[in-house]
Image (cartoon, rainbow, N blue to C red):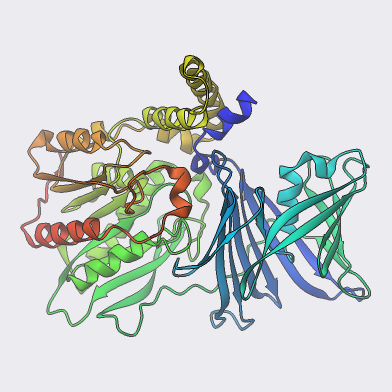
Length: 540
């Protein structure tokens, strides 16, 4: 059990550095006609799936579990079948279950639409998804056991009107790695699986004759999913879809946001997201789109920006899991060079804004000679990646054992942290990008720079302690650059209003909008600093 708890303390985002597990199945009729195709990819406790019909996106879902709190989440979007690029959203929900409370949100805006009291152990579920059945097989050894049994699982079944409380029944055949019968009201499925719980195939009994799931090549690229990055009609700025082609042939797609009715050239920023493969908005959860919020606030204040999908995400090619921090820094440098070439941008007034790991990428890009005029560093660490993760693991361990007797608590924490450290080394051994991140020392890089900077941090940041904002600012001042530090009470690592800051509670926060005070500070400083004569020396 201690080993399991220790593994939970290896930061989930870093587990994405491991190779993802991919699956794909076609749902075919008795005449061998393909009715639909489901593809999914799994990283640890996270599964993302796309169900297509006639080659176009039909359903998209993301399911994950917080390993510490047990919080279950399912974000689900249904599209109106239509040709590529035309399909609209039919409905979109996010369901979060923590203990006995389920919160339903609009998965686009993040607005809470319903709250329900549910039985302990309830999970959000989509009956049509084979990927979610596999998640249950992997999570519950009883479902792949050697004794015939009936396992009943309370679920919130997601549909057009929201989430409906129901019971998912599993009939275990008892052959230990053979098959399972899944039943949820109108949806019956016979699933063939391997001893480890991964799916080999299935038969849907909802139609006569039965439909069959046949395995496909999982390496086949996913069809595009409709995404909308355009502003509303009332916007006072414009957004243009752009693409950058890098020296290695990688294509990065993104959005260029430009103030409306501007006279002459305007200053501009490259916006960089935090850790993990993220889209241009840094959409970590439904309704949380910090880079989009920042881009639009900057545009209203007369500052342009470009933000890009990470490698392998959205409109970008490549493979994020293989990208070293140096690769991400080169990507950022290429984006800054692209900004300088835009006729509407004042080439001497361009800079970087980075959040969390994006701030570290900004520092590395500046140190490699991209020569930004300014740096805006949000929730950034000053110490090595190894030190940051050790602190996060200790915080997580203290949460896990807080109900233990005080005489045992400290020993348990120390033991869990040691086990988590060993688990992290196992992950890092197979991941050059993670090893590079662990070795990274932001303060050392910062001392090489002489660039005006704004350092922003929340007091309730439990992922990077707020004291590191001052350490980083001191390093940035080493060569005489003007540096401003802004610290905000009751703001967490994600820049959300949050008096506690516990990462396990992010999904149940009432608001997923960037703190208004933080947004105002960023916009005010950026406008003032970019309007001033830029420092052109950059690195010394």
